[in-house]
Length: 436
View 1 (tube, one colour):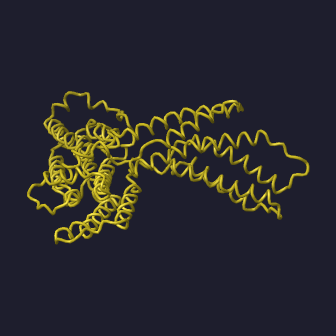
View 2 (cartoon, rainbow, N blue to C red):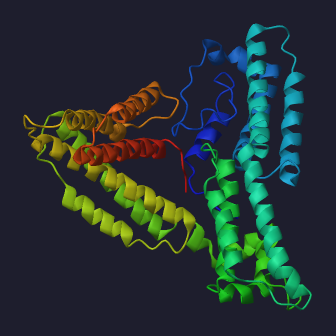
């Protein structure tokens, strides 16, 4: 089995499922972004032994225990609606929902409330199960996987079965690389099941790439031992593209390479990002105080050199993780450079008005970049929307600047436009919820 990359949201999901009958019901995963347990207020009725000993309450607690045992399975299920496990989970949850509905509350409001919460908890799990299995991102993952499987079958497996020669060329390698990139761009919204499905599909495809490029000859030899019923012409590629055999072969020869939770390169990148975050906070803190003496530019350049030396092993996720870390470092460096340039600027009386206008915009952009560097929210936040609007206004202000034939102003305006666009791109990167 493939271990999920991170378990924070899984733990949170389980805590939601196993909360008290008198607490908030499972909400279909909406609270899964919170890493810690949900704190619930328990009404005083829960403390009364009469209700706890009532047959209806006893039955509800029994159902609640079964729901708690199914919760982690629901929260990690990464398959589709026609999968055996999906049907089993759906059947079990539906059975529990019917049992909750049959509990006799004798018209007592307290018991009715407990039954309602129990029903909502089961319904939440059913909804979460269905949402993940039918999520548009899940459909994209399956679509790309099917395309890759068909491509490998047409170009490699089928020709070898018929005694011909497999068409392994640059065109095939490029086609697989495009599919890998498509998988890395699938949005999972932080959902463990979607992340798990994307991770498995991406890992399978990367393993196929390795075999095609001739970098894992051992995998070809091993594949024959995985499914001994295959003929000698059955290549490792065919086995890898079939999930039943892949799950075993993957765990043996490439788990440590593609499990990003264990990947040394990712650990290096994360260590650099943690250090960058510390430096960024220091830079922003000193800028607020008007102190420009804190300029860890040499240290930041050293981090860029370190990132350049990180081995990505042609893994698209590691490459993207490194690229994003590089962007974070470069954003701080450009921020420091502009701050220093603004502090040194001494406009003369003969300065061109258009050139002065560009510098005024750059001053505003520097302040906005400080906000972008310190932003730690989501795109739906009002602060994000406002920041994006202010940056767009600065672009419009630059567009309104008339250089009047002054080459220096033309160059300055061009650089200012690029600077504003880079801030927007940086802000977009920080909020796109990309994951390994």
